[in-house]
Amino acid sequence: MLYSQVAGQEEIKESLIKSINNNKVSHCYIFEGPKGMGKYQLALIFAQSLLCLNFLHDPCNTCKSCVKFNSFNHPDLHIINEDEKNIKREEIDDLINSVYRKPYESKRKIYIIKAAESMTIQGANTFLKTLEEPPGDTVMLLLTTNSNLLLDTIVSRCQIIKFKNISKETIMQELEKYITDKQIIELAANYSNGILNKAINIVRGEDNILHQRQEIIKLFDKIINSHSEIIYELENYFDQQKDNIDTIIEIMMVWIRDIVFVNNNMDNLVINKDYLQLLKTHGKNMKKNSDLIEFMQDISDNIRSNVNYKLAVSNMLLKIQEDFK
Ligand SMILES: [Zn+2]
Image (tube, rainbow, N blue to C red):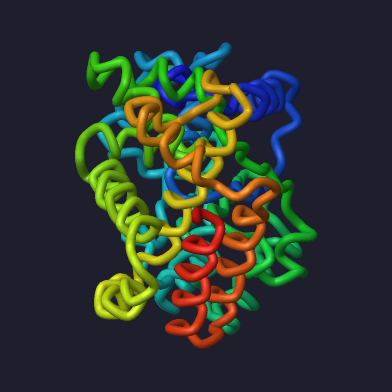
């Protein structure tokens, strides 16, 4: 493996490489960031680097350690919670048992703990003991979407590495490896929120946000061109979409923001460029000084904090109608 196989995160890569070259490797790292940011892949490359016999800026991929590593057959690499479901007590017990043994064939033993937040309290407390007196030849890599979900006593003993969203340009370059359609590439990059794997799933069709986008654009058009009864007619639709409401609101907010851009002659910032004509038509009907985007943000927050879902949705639809008369 090579560091270039993970897109973006250049600062993180640099600092990890430096820590090896300067002999300043910590005994515990927390890789924190949303799903799909490449945390696991970078953890694997870092682990390989730590075990490689000829490491420079990348693992050499030819030494006997690298060969074993690349075939997932390295006895000093331990992966815990591979399926990210939950960390079983036995897994922590096995970890504790092996931590105090010598590595099989390298200078170090590496433990990658996926979804580390799913450790039970007992498991976490047992694990903590290894961090209080860390064996010098051990490196722990804890992966998590949110370090607040880990015990403070664990966090304070680790070096936290926060994964940042990847720039739109980097994501677009990566997507060119998968498809050639520039318009889809740009849409996927825009709708991925800086998460590369999400963008890749969009262009592969495994994430259907672009399909939903078309559905929501049609729905939006229907809402603003109908009488208020439409709100009751749509009740069923929104009931069925309850699990999906965050995505729907996100698509609507992007759409409304695009309308505002078009109204301010900022067409270059529009995301839904393939609907420019419809955006302009909507723009003519939009109330001046509309606060719809802020309103939608509040609705989204309210729904997350479990207010009356039906009421929140009908308020949202009413407000959309009101601002597009
Ligand atoms: Zn090597």
